[in-house]
Image (cartoon, rainbow, N blue to C red):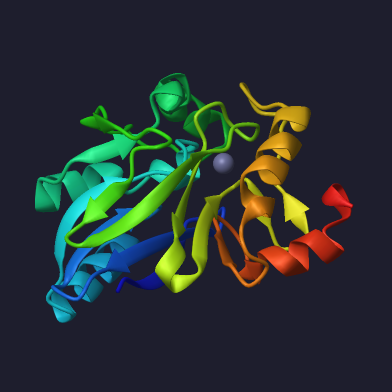
Length: 212
Ligand SMILES: [Zn+2]
C-alpha cells in the first residue's frame, strides 16, 4: 500500500507530493522547493522518516513544479521522469522564471519518459498514468486505485481547472482530458491537485463550474 504526504512550496503555492511504500522507498512528485530553506524542509522529512528516494516523477514541467529537481538529483542521484511532450515546456522553464521574477538556474535533463499505459512501479505497488493534456501538452495524472486517489497536477482543481493561456495550453483539450480520463474514475476518488486543497471526482462532477 502506498501512502502520500505533501508540502506546499514557493510563491506559487505549489503542492509537492511524496509517495511512500511499505519498504520506505519513495517517489517525489513535482518538487517545487525554491530556496535552501524549502529544500532543507523536504530533505529533513526524508531523513527523519528514513526514506529512500527512488525517482522524481513530474505531472508537467511549469517552473513552479520543477524548481527543486536539481537539488534532489544532486542530493540523491535519482532519475527524473516526465512525459516526452513536456520537453519544450521544460526547456522554457528557465527563461520564463526571469519573466515571472523568480530566477532559477534550470533543471537537469529528464532521464526517462513516462507514457500513458505504462504503469509506474514502486516496489510491488503500481501507479496508472493518464495523458491529460490541455494545461500543457505533456501533462500526466497519476492514479492509485487501491488508495482511491489521483494526482492531477494542474489539470483539475477544487472548483476550477488549469489555466490554458500558457504556451501549449488548449481549453477544449483540457476539458476533454478531464471528461474522458478523470471523470471516468469512481466518484469517491480523492483528487490531489498541483495547487490548493484536495477534492473528490464526485464533488467536481457536481460543482465544478467549468464542467457542468
Ligand atoms: Zn502548471
